[in-house]
Length: 78
Image (cartoon, rainbow, N blue to C red; front, side, top):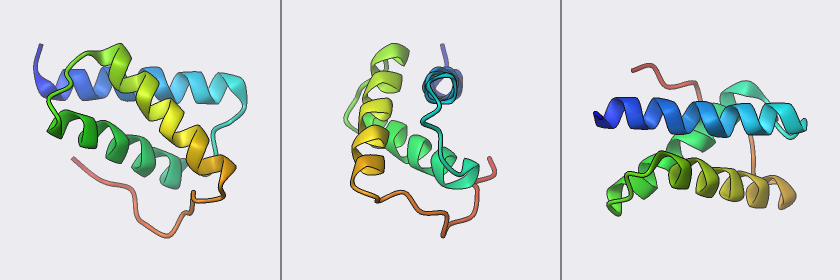
């Protein structure tokens, strides 16, 4: 599986989980945060979709509880 497919799958898993639980914040900020969290893990060599998603969810929840999620960046394209 390509890295792009891995990222897309991990992002979809994380997004869906947060959306279903009602924890998803502003779409732009949430998308950027999740992608950044997934990208950081990829740089360390992690390639398992579920692990990428779960760790991104954990990081998102931690940031949300500390009020660190903001919508001051634009959504990434590509």
